[in-house]
Length: 455
Ligand code: UDX
Image (tube, rainbow, N blue to C red; front, side, top):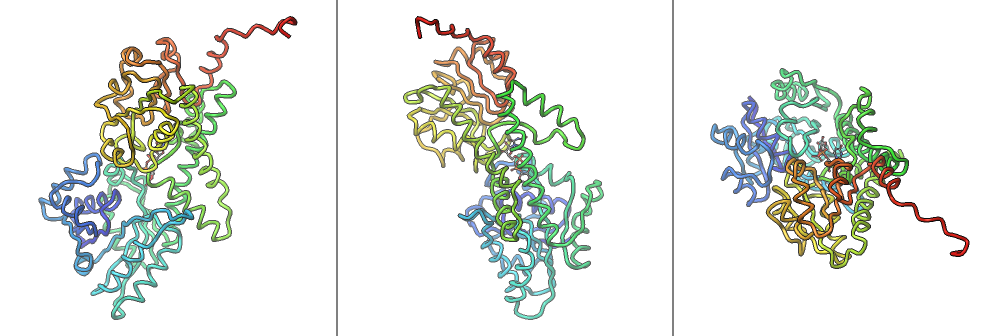
């Protein structure tokens, strides 16, 4: 059993702290936000995350998990300090490390005994060394300590599952002592056969960026293939499936759509490109993935506008506001780019999301929030499926068609079959469904060749 202080109660901090408490450790979660700490002390979560609520309540009840704003006291009472504070992008796309360094200073000032200071946040390579120097600068005496890197790979919406059954646990340290302490903390996962990757701090820091940027590039790659499919009459879903059957490629993260969003891929790809450039290495592939993603999102907006022909005065229904299903997080969510763009063109927007409407309402203006997909479709000239929530996968599309003023359907997540939608006489557009486009073009009556008289 370890005495652990978790600084930061966002997705990573709260999930990691709670799960480490569930392993039997004594965990104090710290946040500077008094409102958030009061909410958590009342057993309520500041965000939605599947199965986390019950885990927090149980561990609080059993006295292994507590919340405080007193960061100094929590550090002094703990042997392992995890730092899971935000590392947002600054204007230049670099990771803003002010919160990370603030925690390091506070640890230095409260180094009352040996501690391991573990970086859980995604930080550029070399941050561990800077944290170490800061702690040495601010510690009162020569009290020993170690710094470690332990990046997190959880996905929002499946964070608890991802923590409890990780594909791997990465531990970056410079000393055997720190490595042993962290290996002991993660032993319950290790016993679940989760491979433990033990390496240096710098290597662990880069593993996180290299992994996230690769996933983002994989998404941008299939999105570019989707646009090519539309031009050559191929079907990206079949291309992706056949690619994914190659064990060297794998089927995951090959779903063409409206591009990636969220609080990680956009930030981490920019940060990697930035510190690679600073190191004198042009991160051209990551840069291309960023550009391709921006293009994909703009292309989906252009497609929506084209389906409306003249957006002014038209009604657009948007299904899904979160950046992905199973979360209420709307950061960098495609719908939050699409809706203002259509409103600027004079369209009126109605929307529904199973849980992200409160989060979205804080970022959007003049959107009519509805109680379900059918209310969104009522009187709409275009229906956009923007986030692939399960409840949008089995809608009564005949009923939807009847409710709409003009049956235009833009399926940004390829949930529906183009041929079935055509049978219902929707004007359907997906992403990368080139076979459908080719057939639709072949069905369109050919324009009569201009006769000589017509000139
Ligand atoms: C990501 C990484 O997956 C996770 O390992 C890391 O710890 C944090 O960042 P997250 O951002 O929560 O997790 O969500 P993820 O499921 O990766 O999706 C990110 C974005 O990619 C979403 O907008 C999603 O819609 C999009 N996506 C994902 C696709 O467009 N196509 C895909 O095939 C998969």
